[in-house]
Amino acid sequence: MRRDAHIEDLLRRLAPQVLGVLVRRYGQFDACEDAVQEALVAAAVGWPEEGVPENPRGWLITVADRRMADQLRSEHARRRREDRVAATASADAALAPAPGDEQSAEHDDTLTLLFLCCHPALSPASQIALTLRAVGGLTTGEIASAFLVPEATMAQRISRAKQRIRATGIPFGMPAEPDRAERLRVVLHVLYLIFNEGYSASSGPDLQRGELTREAIRLTREVHRLLPDDGEVAGLLALMLLTDARRSARTGPDGALIPIAEQDRGRWDRGSIEEGIALVTDALSGTPLGPYQLQAAIAAVHAEAARAEDTDWPQIVALYGVLERISPNPVVTLNHAVAVAMVRGPRAGLGLLETLDGDDRISRHHRLEAVRAHLLEMAGDREAALASYRTAARRSTSLPERRYLETRAARLR
Image (tube, rainbow, N blue to C red; front, top):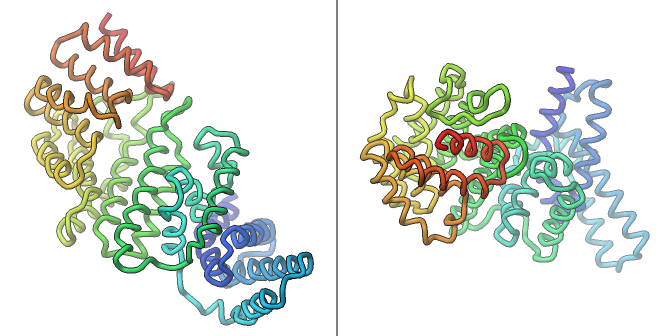
């Protein structure tokens, strides 16, 4: 079992590298992805019995390349392509490196593949699905299960994303320098969304989906490996590690949500906390300030407090103030309001929440009413808090969060 698990991890890590080689060579994303999947299946079946080859990456590239060449020849025979197209296909095959040449190549196309999957021509939902499929190595069924949609629906979403890439002629390669920073921002945002969906599932019976948080952290580690000097990449990885460190303490034996102030901090993962703090400390001291670094710094302040009452709330308020200036958004304001309430009192936090009531991005979201209810309860306004808890519970699509909000409301009756 342990050997098979090692092979599974190895295949998942190598999959985007192999796909990158084929897409760079043939330029047909969907066909290349199919060929890589066939190679991965062959490895998953054969390697446990025959042993992992000396160069597993080269083995996968060779097998996938043969599958792709066979497919091109089959298409040529079936469709009787024009001589020009056939000549191009032959030229591609002739240019393909021999196995020995490929085994010596160390170029890693993982980041380029991420840029392709997160191209702005694709919808956010397609970017997430394609990233998990092509770069993460998750099966369509695993992605569908994580997002609580039928497998057929997710398959269509991924298929449309591939068709969109083909139809728009998106080239496989790193974007030009002026666009690279913006495209990297999109890549990091997609990884951030994947992590958030895993850490606090937007709907369904479970609060957390570990397969998504683990995959988001793994992929972000890969980006950090490729871009070790980028402060925002380090900041995002630190944020994920510091946040995920609390995972085992966030729910009780019955799956009920436990807020951070009531968690058993002895159950927090100290190894992840130490790694996250080291990452964000280095990033803040040596790179331009960015929103992921600031969020990681806030998470580090929480992680460094041995007890909830030891939390340095004034420092968190200051960090949120900077974050709102460089990356204003309603979720930041929502969290800022909680921190302000802890320092200046609940009425000050409620005043900050009022600025969000007219913001369509969050005015109907259950978390706005949940925070309002919490601050009203702190202020002693039990009747108003009860009403807000009930509203928040009605709006939540996450069963654990809904039960938590209903429990808070029941205490105030």
